Amino acid sequence: METFFLVFMLVSNTAATVLMLRLLGISDRYYAGRKTERRYFRYFIWSVIGMAVINTALQLLYPHRVRFETGSFRELSGADAAMVLIGHTLDLLNLFMTTVFLFLWLVYVSWRLYPGRDYARRRFWRSLAPLLLSGATVVISFIVILFVRDTGLISLISVFAFLIIRVIYFIVSVLRINLYNRQNGRIKFFSVRGFYIPVVLGTLIEDFTDFNVRALGAAIGITFLYASIVLEQRYQDSETGLYNSSYREYLEKLMQHRRFSPCSAMVFTAGDADSIKELSAVLKKKLPKDCEPIRHSDCEVVVLTQVREKAPLYLVTQEVQELTQVKADCVLKKKSETPAEFMERVL
Amino acid sequence: MEVSGISNDNIESFLPLLGEDVSDDLKRVYFRGIGVTDDNDRAAGAVVYELIDSESGDDTKSRIFLAKYKSREAGDLLQQYYTENAVSDEEIALSTYELPEEAEAAVFTDAGFSAGKKESDEIRVTLKEIAGLDIAKKRNLPDYIGSLESLSVLQYREAVKRILFKGKKGIAEDLAYLPKNWFDEKVSACSISDDNADGLFLVRRTPSGVLLPVLLYAYGLDFKKKLLYMLSQAAACALELYPPETQVLISRKNPETMALVSKLLPKTGGYEIFYGSRKEG
Image 1: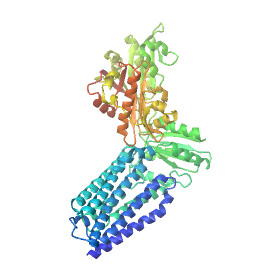
Image 2: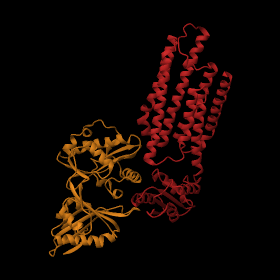
Image 3: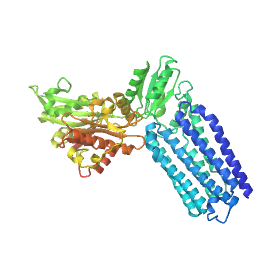
């Protein structure tokens, strides 16, 4: 049985590592133009590789659940004592890496949803403090075990400390995503459930059984996240970076199922295909977050919004017209119109 | 007697009836005035109303908030002009009134409007009362909170645009059209992150010296803290600049403002007003 679990662990952690290394290799392409987000995403991937490597070392060296074997090892000496010490250290590091993983997830998701140096700077110490505390717990636990040669209470305290800190990071990240959804509407192309479910399942399975799947769960979660980013790229027009006609069809399907209903639209018509690039650059700067800019044809961009009044639309069209030589129109959805009828009128 | 719309050409003659604040409001995009003059060309009455949702996909509504007339005849003429001209010109689907005196409302109730009484959405407090609140005593505000003066016109426009796109406009239907200097730039506060304003507390100082909070909104992380910091910033500036007896007129039209005012000023209530409505067309 022990051999089975050992082999399972090797396969699981190897799969996680290979998956993450592959992702490292291909992620640059899809993060072009978003350097900081790419950087955080890569740190995130490395934390999973770290988890897999440390867990493998721990299980190979000390196959039993070290942290549940508490007690004095003063009677041991030489290599035996060193093995126990190394095993407990690796176990602490294993727990610490999971905390690092969740910390980096919080950093990534905060940047993804609320990019900006000021936001990051203001929350930096608050976000880092729990991680520093867990790091300090590792160091203190190691020193105590080294000199006292008793894993006893320290081991148990450190486990609970890590658990609490992990839960804090988890909850804060969920709250942040909920806050974003409330303020800006549901975040698009960001598979939150696809991330959380494998991560939580992997953690619970590893905590309560002998199956080492934490790193694999994290790797699968990140892969789902990445897949949703790739999907977003498929809906982007390669020339302008705006949404393409496939995205318009996707929205029309959502409208049929009453999951999306635009309230207004702005239609921008550039003079020629060259001017559309200039127009799209301006639109990316000037449009608020919850607008859907779709390249409708070679020279036309339609922006769907949830705004119900003309005045804010005029603010945007005026700004855009000040910077480009385009024609702009604003269209409001009538109360009696269905979304499909509105789209027909706009297009 | 002669009835006509109030415009820049004739507003001076209606000033005693309207007051300087309402006269100032008539320069705004969605405010309309109807005036009646007697045979000696003296102002005999005026009605002022605000259009709501007039540039949206929803039906246009009007809110009549001033109706002053020296005789019943003048009042009837005003009401008739409103019904026959204003309603069709502006495509008003629902007319409402909110007036402080029952006598003022009489011409409307007799013309098919419903009639009722309620507590006003507006409350009046003085700066002296605000000075007693905890938010006014808060010091050491973070460096990202400042006055509206610290924003450029471009930053202000960008912030208003973003807030409008979130469906918020405070008590100003015409927020999109109001320039930065329409507000009291020293008392109004903002929150800045990465060179963009992600929170605004816009306060207007009316010609008569009343402070009128128009918009309080913040978004992004820590938005609740930003709201409180901006309130503190504004209160501190107002107390420095204006005498303690300066009036502050707070409109509790939306539930968030109602909740905030109930928390900060629980003992302050509105005054009695007479209100009613009529479906048009």
